[in-house]
Image 1 (cartoon, helix red, strand yellow):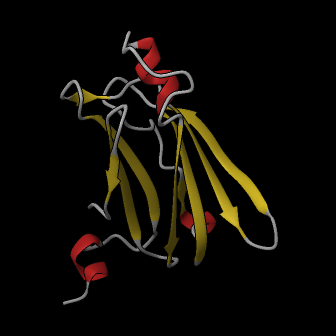
Image 2 (cartoon, one colour; image 1 turned 135 degrees about the vertical axis):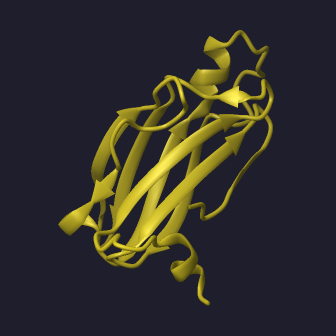
Length: 128
C-alpha cells in the first residue's frame, strides 16, 4: 500500500489541500495565524491567503477540485506574529517569524500539511 492510498478515502475522487497549526509551546491549536499558499512554476504565484480559525485550521481547503495540480508549492505561516500576540517574550528579531514549507503534490489526491510550532522549532508531515 502506498502513502497516497492511506490518505485518499473511498469515494474521494477530487483532491484537496488542507492545513492545521498546533502551538506546541502552549498545547493548543494556533488561531489567527496568517497563512499563504504559493505555486512554484517559472515564478512564485500566490494562490490563497487566509487566517487560521479557533481550531487552528483554514475554514475551507486551500486548494480543491480542478485547482489541484501536480507541482511544487510553498505554505507560509506567520508564527512570529502569533506568538507575539500570545505574549511570548521573543528575541528581536524573532528566531522564527514566517515558517515556509516547500512540498510537492500530485493532482487528485488529498494532502493535509500540518504545522507543529513553538517560538523556537517546528515540524510538519503529510497528514490525513
